[in-house]
Image 1 (cartoon, rainbow, N blue to C red):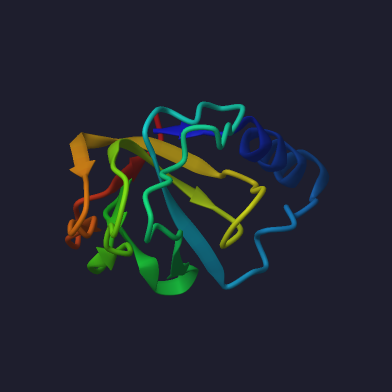
Image 2 (tube, rainbow, N blue to C red):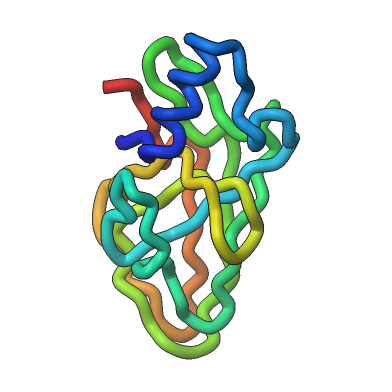
Length: 134
């Protein structure tokens, strides 16, 4: 799991200057999938691009379960089914917008590569995605 450079800087501003990041007030986050690590610079170059893919909206107040030092997704998360194209998905990220440019907050590796092709709908059962502070 990795915090983006933007998130690291926002945390420092919050702790040291009392400035909340712009994305904190929103009730919704979005989950994005990637074919490679988006890295701390938050590159969107490797975001999934199969036909039918869209980022999934998550309600902040209920999307994640806190088990101490690790957070996991609280419920089933389903992405759009692939109708054309294919992707070998390896990473996920929590971002602040439904499409386009983002403030990428957190990213992490999937436990295994998820190969998506026509007819496959990526989904993650409750507890399948994990985020922890390193």
